Structure formats: structure tokens, C-alpha cells
Length: 182
Ligand code: NI
Image 1 (cartoon, helix red, strand yellow):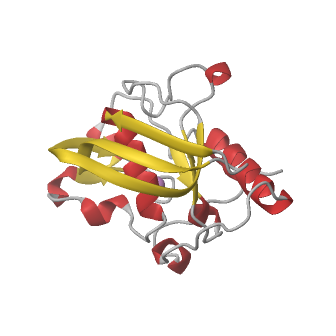
Image 2 (cartoon, rainbow, N blue to C red; image 1 turned 120 degrees about the vertical axis):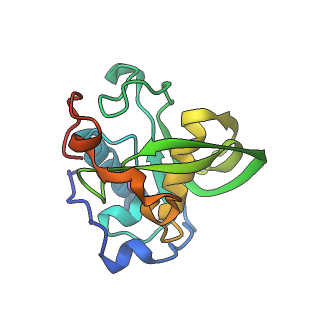
Image 3 (cartoon, rainbow, N blue to C red; image 1 turned 90 degrees about the vertical axis):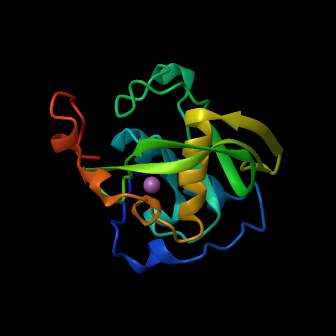
């Protein structure tokens, strides 16, 4: 399949509420996931959502395959998150604990911001074959899922920043880190 160009903030497609997938294990769904995977890998993303490549369906992928190494160069300090295809996700936030953390987004290239996210959550959904996925996660894994799931509801992380003093250019906030123009 192909590396797709990633839509940037301002594109109307990024603000839509995406549509649930109704049929699993179809050539169209497999093609979409291959495109998402190729694009995420090429861009070194921690995750990517279908609307970011112009397909308004409730499909996200995130994490890293073991063969790619366990660390994302864009998030070198983050815990490893297993590679996951998640279709029609349903998130249930657990408890009141919220943690601030730096985020970037392939649709907001070159920027970083501090975003509050729930520390723990349960998520459910399906893989591309229709197999059920059901997980209890915390920390960076929980953050990535919340960020990607937001894309399915037309929410980009800058909309969740509480203090815009902590939103700016990656190479200004982190001058000594080799952060790519994500
Ligand atoms: Ni994003």
C-alpha cells in the first residue's frame, strides 16, 4: 500500500465525528490499515487515526511492533506500547487521576503541548478481523489511546491544553533533543 500525506490542523476532515466500521475483514479495511501502518511508520508516529489520512472511519492504530524495537524515537522516554489495530473503540476512564504530559501530533507538525489525560482507562473494540479487544491500561499507553480516540471525535490535542504557555515549537522547548519535524 502506501505512505499517505497526513492532513494538518485546519482541514475540515479532522473535525468530523467519524463513522463506525460495519464490516470487518474486508479488502477496504485491510487496505486502510496498511496505509495507516505505512504512514505511521514513515512518520515515526506513536499512533495515527484514519481521519488523519482523510478517511472518516473509527479506526486507530498505535504502538510498535517488537521487530521495530521497543522505543519510539519521538518518545524515547515512553514505555513501550504493543502494536494495536483498534476499530470502533469504546473508552471508559477509570478514577479521577489525571496527569499532565507532553504530546505531539502528526497533524500538528513541529509542535508540542502539555495535555492532561486520565492515568487509567479501560478500552474495548475490535481488530480488523472483528476479534474483540479488551484492555485495562495506564500511563503512556492510556495517553496514546485517549489522543488517538479523540481524533475520531474531531478533537485535536491543542483543544485540550489547559495552559497555552506550554504549547509551542518542539525545537524551542527541547533544543537538545533530536526531535523530528513530526
Ligand atoms: Ni494526533
